[in-house]
Image (cartoon, rainbow, N blue to C red; front, side, top):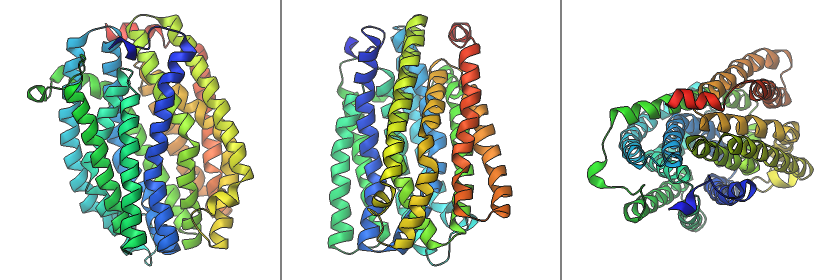
Length: 448
C-alpha cells in the first residue's frame, strides 16, 4: 500500500515513476483512435477517414464532462489517502463507481440518440454523414465502458497506482489493433467495425481494472455491497469535479465549433486536420501525464500537510512538461508532411494537414504550462480557477476570434491560429495566479 504514496522520497523520482506509466497508458489510449483512423484511411479511403475525423470533437464533447467529474473524485480520494482517512476514501470510491454506472448509461443512450442531429449541427458534409453517424453510434454503444474505465483509472491514480491501468490498457490496445485488422483489413467491413473494435477493447480494460480493485489487499479495495451513493462524498466529488466537467464540456463545444469551420473547407481539409488531431493526441502526452501526476502529487501532499513539498513538485513538473512538449513541437514541425502521410495518401490532404500542424506545434509549451497549472490547482482543491480561465480563453475568446477572423481572412490557417493565441492568453493568466495567489494554504481552509 505505502509503495503508492507520493508523500515520501525524492520529488523528481516519485513524480517521474508515477508519470511514466501514466504517459505510457495515455500513449496506448491514443493508439485506439489513431489506429482506427490509420485503418480506415488506408483500407477504405479518405472519405471514411473524414467520417471518423469529424466525430472526434463530438466524442470528446460527450465524454469530457464525466471525465471531469472523475477528476473530482480523484482529488477527494487523493486527499483522503494522503491524510490516511481510509474510511472517507472508501466512501468516495464506492460513490464514484455508483455515479459512473448511472452516468455511463445516460451517456450511452444520449450519444446514440443525438448522433445525427449533432453531426448536422456541425455542418458535416452529406457525402461523409452516413459513415460519421455509423461510426459515432457504434462507438457510443460502449460509452459506459469509457466512463467506468476513467473512473477506475482516476481512483487508482489518486492512490498512486499508475502501473496497473497501464498493464490493462496495453492488453486492450493489442486487442483493438487485432480486431481493427480483422474487421477492416481482412473482412472488409466499413467504419462501424472500427468503432466496434474500440468498444470491445475499452470494455476489456474497464473490466480488468474492476477485477483488480475487487481483489487488491488495500484500503481502496471495492466491495460490491458498498457500491452506493454517499451524499457527503458525492457532494465533495461534485464540488471538485463539476468545474472540471463544465470546463471540459464547454471547451469541447468550442472545439466542435472549430471543427465545423474546418468542415467548411471541404473533405481534404477534414481528412488532413483529422490526421493532425490523431497525431496531436500523441504530442500532448507529456502534457496530460504531468498534469495528471501533478494533480495526484499535490492532492496527496497537501492532504498530508506537506506544503513545501507540494510546491517544489509543482515547479519540477511544470518545467519537465514544457521542455518535453516543446521538443515534440519542434520535431512535429520538421516532419509534418511525413506524419500526416501516415494517415492519407492524398497530396491535398497532406498539404493542408501539414500546414495546420506547423501553425500550431511550435506553441506546445504554452499548452503544457496551462494544463500543468490546471492540474496543480485541481489537486489543491481550486478547480474553479482553471475552469473560468479556460472558459474565457479557450471557449469564449476562441469562438469569438474564429467567428470574426474567418470572415475577414477565409483561410484554414486562420482557424489554426486560434489555438496558439488562446494558449498564450491562458498561460499569462495562470502565471500571474500561480505566482501571486495563496493556493497552497487555501486548501487547508477549504477542506477542514
